Image (tube, rainbow over all chains, first blue to last red; front, side, top):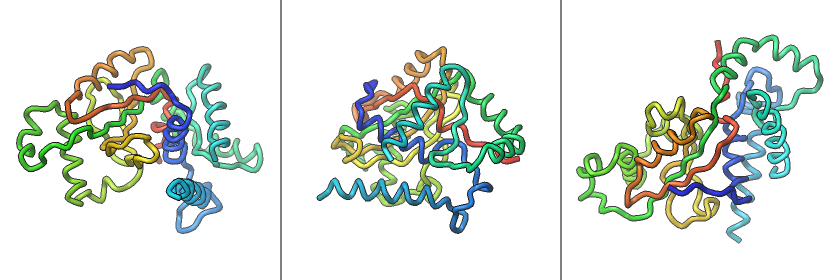
Length: 57
Length: 188
């Protein structure tokens, strides 16, 4: 088992896992939503996947 | 996004030093203080339950990488006997994935329980494995999970993860984290 010293980039990725999928979600209160899915979340996910794609080029 | 995430996290960490925190998901926006007051009144009980669950606890991240390619067919039967329960679980997961038979329940991000750590963890949560480009490692990630452990007893948790050790699997631990993964409100 390796205890990972929080290298900045890796840390950010793990942090985003938690911030985008964890935390308190208040679906009833989200007004900017489409088919029950929070648009802000979709935008953040889309942005992150495009950053990942950029790395390929 | 990186800046926002860091700023969000800095505030959550700072408050955590003094009180348990149930952070709202990143980019949840309220337009005025009255909306926040109304929310707190409406969800009073749910927030209390969530805060009680994480009080005195910390979250640990456990990632596992397949360092060796086991002979899948030959090891299939042996996987459950020679390896600890944790490693056996990971091998089964990997085999299932390779056959393209990942079940629908597992496909959802951040759903379902992770392999059992017994008394060492009060709760667990499974995340999607990270792409090798993100993890910075060539080996495939076979587990990306979060566990809720006692803040005062990190050693018990670390020992429990240690029992998963096997020659096929390398584990990485991150944390302790503010328990982001365990603050969802139970709808009542």
